[in-house]
Length: 173
Image 1: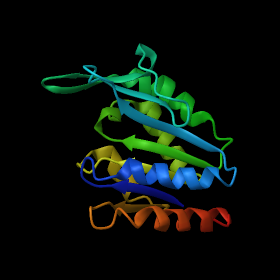
Image 2: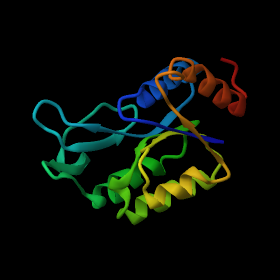
Image 3: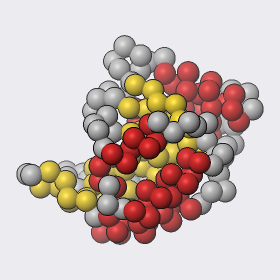
């Protein structure tokens, strides 16, 4: 059972994941996976790291350069660090925050993501709302439930998602 949130930018998808993970950590569950994040101040580049290990702004963690024209992906970072992060499967739940077009040329990373989706460790993730061909394999996978986040439903979604995951893991929340 995997849950992926989708919706407009800044609607609260990552906030929902944070709220759910905070509650799951209270039950001593081991959280794995990754988060992507934007640089600080004038650094508009995009980075990746282990979900629970801070946000370093190093070249090793950079997955895209940003320019006026948009983002230029660095697929080798997804294929090296991204795959390394996702290879730690001694966890109770995997976070993937977020998946989008930047990974389109990162074949090793995409393969790892799809292998994990075929597996049994629950995944809680975010998928970009825009059409990206490789994301369609996730959205329509039989083990995936995709939930659209809106301003109208975002306040009750943490409890709904928490209920679904805790039921699957047989954990009382």
